[in-house]
Length: 460
Image (cartoon, rainbow, N blue to C red; front, side, top):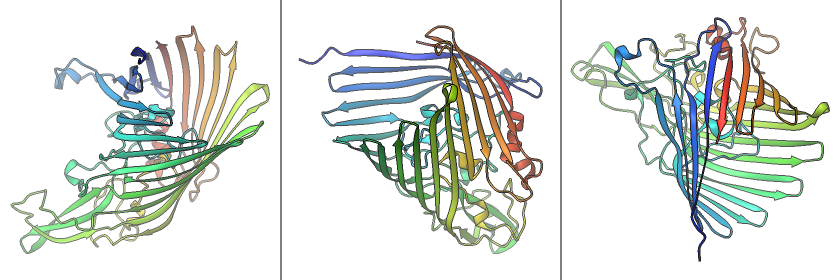
């Protein structure tokens, strides 16, 4: 006889306020005000779900352009079914996947896309689910995890229309995206072997980039006339294969974690010919087509050290690095191309200057070398927790000495009761006036994001 079905619910409600340090104005970005998770268990089958309410402050002119009174967005973050056997677990549905040995910023962690609005949070909170199937198979000390999805999932990136500090240099229109021609199958497998002093893992993942890339340029004219031409700048998603290696080493004094990812990426858009999207009655003739045909090999690595310092202070340090190993592409046309965020210079307008990784650690959008240091300590029987987190840009820039940029957070948490948490935090971002990118340097753009915040979070 099977066991009686059971339903368990949990979640939180979060009341928060965030203001700039410079003028105390409210920072207008979305945040999750509430979340509810449930699991319905019956014998070997369970249904798992996670729904959140995302809130964003309305502007003063909101009701001049909309009659909708709602300022919440309901997000079905996960909803999937699990079937468990003696030595396996199969999951199907919308779910979040986590790969890698380090806690965060693993180059092996590519099965789920990232939500950049929550990129400064930890764990699953910064990820987005995808409709997929997953299988965990256990054989002694060996665990195999396979993931498959027929859907291409992209990162959620801020569109530059609110106060979030991380923005992209260009935001293509929908008509500028050259769609993936084949079915966008994605999938991979990870094997983890555990032993007395830790574990080692290897993985392979194949999919399409989470962030778009420049894929080519078309030049249109009116019939045979090119005296007035139209440049169609196209963006797409490269196919990327990732080979990953990782491990955890445990001792009585410290824990050492590390992940390494080798990425092979290639633009699949060999032919980008298409009808003119601008004006078929005037720019009706495609004269030249320049697909970039990008190919590149690059690596990312993250090393993490955890230990306990004197006075029971917990210490975590991470070091992240990214570098391009090889790059090849066709050339851009010898005409002035207006790409936002890049000042036209015929000597520097080479495709390699626009290359960015489309998979891997989300920190790569900020820098190619960084260190993260976390210190925390609890007081009063773990009722109070004080923590300091710093992210340092360690990349080398011409004319800049020392750290060119940093983000530091100072935070105190107080548990009023087992279910009620209060939080106060201050975040300070420092850039560099000597950076060669000037105001376009990411940490310079983020300085205005320096803020303090209050949170009152109730768990149930």
